[in-house]
Length: 254
Image 1 (cartoon, rainbow, N blue to C red):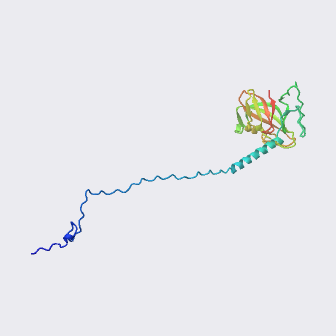
Image 2: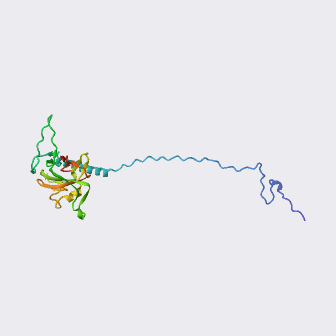
Image 3: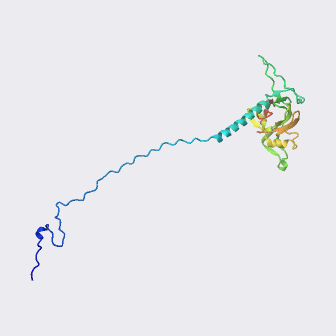
């Protein structure tokens, strides 16, 4: 057998190349390391700027409307008191009711050395605003009304009861409010009226009553004012008003 002829072009081929195979690349020394990708530091994000928001204007029209309405009511009350409210109470001569058109006594001119006016006492008629008051007597009771049937009232201490006569001396009707009347003890403590006891004491028809009674000009009512005071404590003076806004007049009770 004859050997196959050699590659006649072997000398023209690159080293490491054999027929039918791709030439082998010579090994490189030292072997090349893979190159790492370039490093870029992360960029910091710049803070975003937002312009400050302007505060919204609050709408106060509802509050201002209510305040204006309240101020109007207060102004009306002040004007009403100034026009129709009671003047400072002054005592009048005792005995006999005053006429509807009776004019108040003219004030005496003040001068040095003049004596102070005497305080009104029980039985003396005194005036405050549209009303003339006369305390005719004082009584005391532990309970008032029909307590047997559970309809009356019993005092926490003891009721001091003022028997009064009230005449409207003005030319306009005026409401007599028992809650505007007060008494004081010797220590200066102030006592409110007991309205529930007043309802029991005064007539059911209201013709003679000091409990929220509307009195027309020239008319006179008789009634009783009850004050719940500690037992043994005496009322030394009363303060009577023709309305809650009047100056009032003082009557000595002892």
